[in-house]
Amino acid sequence: MMKENFKQTAQRYIHAVQQYADLMMDKARDRYGAEATPLFADGVHSETYEPVRWLSEGQTWTLSNLANQQNWLRTLDGLSEITGDASYKTAAESAVRYSFDKLRYGRLMCWGGHMAFDLESKQQVFAADKGPQHELKCHYPYYELMNRVDPKATASYIEAMWEGHIADWSNLEFSRHGQPVDRNRQEYSIWEQEYKADSPVFFTGKGLTFINAGSDLYYAAAMLHRFGGKEKPLTWAKRLAHRYVETRNDKTGLGGYQFSISVLPGQRGDRAVDQFGEQLKEHAPIEATLTTASQAHTIIGEAALCRMTLAEALGQAGKEFLDWAVQDLLAYGQYAYDASNNTIHPMLTNGTRLTGLVMEKSGYYGREGQQLQAHKVDYLLLWSYVTAYRLSGHEELWTIARSMAEGLGFGNIGDSAGTRPALNMEVQCTHPHGLFVMLELFKTTKERKFIQLAQRIGDRLLLYRNHRGLFMPSADHEYAKLDAVEPLALLHLAAELQGVRNRLPVYCGGRPFFAAAYDGEGHMTDNTFIYSKAKTRAAQ
Image 1: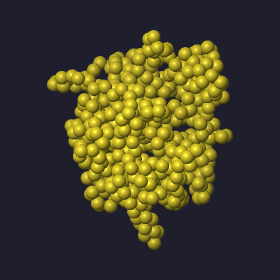
Image 2: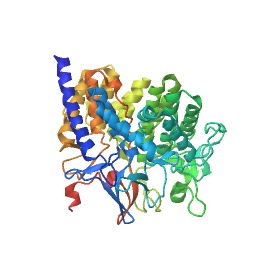
Image 3: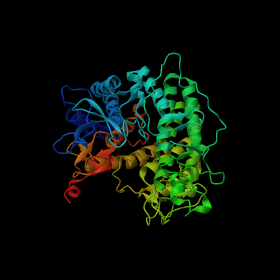
Image 4: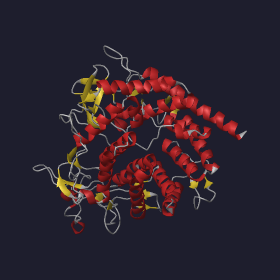
């Protein structure tokens, strides 16, 4: 009877995801301009289903950004896997195939943080205030699908990504912004470069070696190794990931958000030095040793989940990625995490907390008079700590996860992974990452209470985030994002109930975005400027 109930519940979730996919395949599919393509608009109006548009220098773009549709592609692929209906997978493959043919920026892709495709004009477009820059930051594309569609094009893109972003292979200085490199490819491999293993970190360069961009680089190269078995891409992926390890303070083990000092001659020096050089003189801060709460979130959240995903995908060959992620989680758990109020604090890597520091000078980190703030722990951070415990067995990670879970209202997940939990089955969680937390806890412990709470959260996602066939934070939100995580999370829950979750595409917490100047508004990011708008707020 229980298995039958699981099957019925799974079908309910699958049905909701199918309804969403069918609606979006109809309403968001490209039907604009002179010809239709297999592409999709990034989002639609929640009532009229008109596509999301962007105003730039008098032009109106109907946005299609494949880098911001990777979870949509995972959802389509997963639907075909779990239902046997190949039409969803075919739609995903067709979009990728068309993009390989038509959306190339050199050998890069026209996608990411500052580039997109206008479905109306069938032209590549880019942020007016940034230029044609290739940028991925915690996007973590669905490379498995890309490789299935065209292995050569996937390898070519990943190689072009490294070639277009790495400024100095000897020390792996890179820029978050990349451009195509025009080079004769005959008898030339980008992986045959010289790396100086003794090159120090905290060198002065022009690029901002942020881990949100760096993690996308090493994720891509490691996936290329996974597909073809070549060692060189994996070697370079590990070299880049290890650069962040090298920034760690010898005493605390806290690593930085970047490994270089960014100076633009005639424009600015290191931004932490410029703003805090005098105020925090005794600590001699640089950007690579000053970590805001949001930056800490990326280090132990998205970037850690990315590394742990690689560790599982690569097995023994990816062990270092797991080790480095666990070490970060332990260090930040000790120094930056506050169990008393479930917060992550801004830090200097020497262990000094900066919460409440009133800025004496305006700069990159805020305006004069503002304070550096701690941030509340969210579901993604808890998910990261539980995953790290499952893969490493380190008890301190479970202790931190237990505290985080209690702070998020889940109750006691267990004094240890082997003890029964005392869960709050009425927790008011309506976020898909909370569902991934419960699935991870169930995978870790096999305790049925976790899968039961996962179903409660799944039901709440349908009740509070599934409106008019779309997934969005509320019924009042103006626009629905094609790349919603909710349907993918529900598919994973359904697959777990059916015992086939290992057949679904992996999601590791990526957070895609598009950021550009918007006429009359300045530089805006779609996630906040478009997809966070509710009608009640818009009317004020």
